[in-house]
Length: 582
Image (tube, rainbow, N blue to C red; front, top):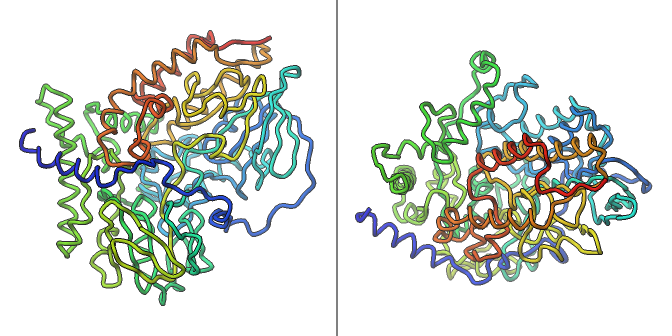
């Protein structure tokens, strides 16, 4: 790898440009004077009703894919005494809120959508739109009767464990008082939009919004495009992640001028989408979806497979691996180099202006940031009405009442679209705007502080019967829907077995939490070594990885191994590490 020394030097130079001392603190939370950015454009008729007193066995917080799958599993086990609180006006979670033009899933639909064999649904394409995904989720909810269990436009604000009664006493944003034996928190991994901490955001007098709260009243059109009201507008797009890559071509098509403000170039591969062949799809043998999912998972974790069933840009990295190289680590390192070289060569092939092409090139490893896949994003930089504003890692400097200031220039704009992602790595209760108070008046924030303690990421000591579906201490998979499916399976198992055993309350032993925390740190070494040399992103706490961020991170031994740990734990049937109160 001596000949690649200059590439690693470039990687380091670009990383240093973007390194900031403030880490996650560089972002502006959407609250206070910024609360309007969180307005719900899809809620046209707010629910108005009297507060209720409700008693149920299980309270599920969140009506996204995680909450829906838990509810379906409860229904299948006959545990129908539950309610769901969802702050949107329908099910869907991230796919309910994100309706920006071009929004779609970057994971193949045949492995992303759960329960395809059970429902018989045939996705229209290999990569489907957000609208199709949200429709599918709603159909699942209809099929399993979940609409009879949900309270929309309602969220959990606080819960208090009542030790004497063995119940959680919860309050909702609509004033409901809810007592439940179990609380399941499925609030979502990417659910709270964030803004960059740019001075002057609040001073801008034009139109501005976050991609997850797209304002079609201002732009015109729909998620299918036709943003006709932008034909006389100059639009600033701040951010170059997945949302920006997907919506930028639609903005470029209809806006008078589009200015793309880039801090870090994004790796954009080919999507290779196609319409589903119904004949091929319907002739698949029983068990095909799980086989396809596991084939994808194994390839993503660096295992060699005789066949690549999904055959997409995610798994394309394996094609660059020299299988004759006995040094497996070196073989994958070289494959990573070649893959990123291919990404940069694609930019040269598509973007006609050499100077612009150079600025669009990502100089970091393949998984330092989540890669994107799109056929049109790079092409927009050949359009006369599109200009790339590269800030050389510094980001936008300031926003005035009518301008965006960056790279030493002032840019008058009519509209600012913030494609700046979601909160990751921030304090759980603060991010979810709820307070969980367990035994002895201790909140989750009190217990966890800047770290995290749990058994398998699902339960934490002194918070009996609280089950959490989260990334911390859990497996992290590219196909997050699969991991959510496995978490839902595990959470439902715990509740079902507790009911069968007549258990009143369940929580981890302190020693079990300590051992799992040690395992998280032990297994983090490989991933942390990879990410600590990466350009700042949510994968490495915006370049501020430390002992606390590692200790509260995800399980680094791989998603497959993590799921195997959960499966073996359930197979043993002894509730290892959990204290049962009768």
